[in-house]
Image (cartoon, rainbow, N blue to C red; front, side, top):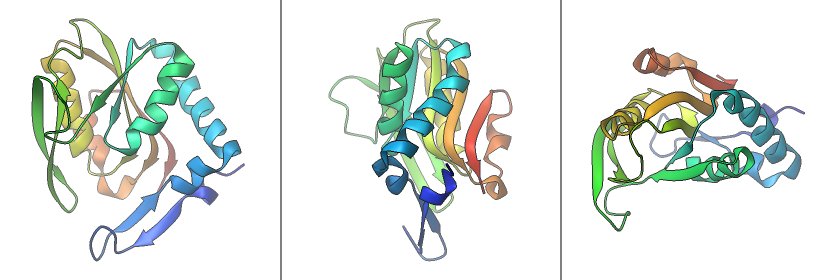
Length: 170
C-alpha cells in the first residue's frame, strides 16, 4: 500500500507559494496509519529510545503511538506558553518565518536516549532546535524519524551529526 497516495497537497497554505503536505488522510485510514506506525517503529526499535519526543502538533499523534508500541515514554515539544511548568526554549527559522518550541525543564534526565519525531522534515530548523533542547537537558539523540522529507529544502544539512530517517521523500 502506498503511503504517498494518502498525502494530500494543499496549495498556498499557510501562505501563498507553499504546498502543505497534509498527513491527515493517511492518519484517517486504518491500514496506512498501522503501516506508518509499523514502518517507523521498525526503524526506531533498534535504537532503544527511553523517550519519544513529538514536535507540535502533528508529531504528537504518531509520537505517542510509537512510544506506546515501543514501550517507552513520550514527551512533547510545544509552542511557547502551552506547557504549565518551568520550560527551556529554542527559537528557529521556518521556510516561511520564525517560531519557537519549549520543553518542560525536567522532561529529560541526563543520559536519557531520545528519539525525535515529527511529521515533516523541511528546512531542518525545527528538528535542530529540538535536538539542541534535548542536549541542553542532558539527553542523547538516538535518531530522528519523519513521515515526510522535502529533500529540495536540504533539511538534513542541519542534522548531519544525527541518524535521520524518512518514510516518504519529495
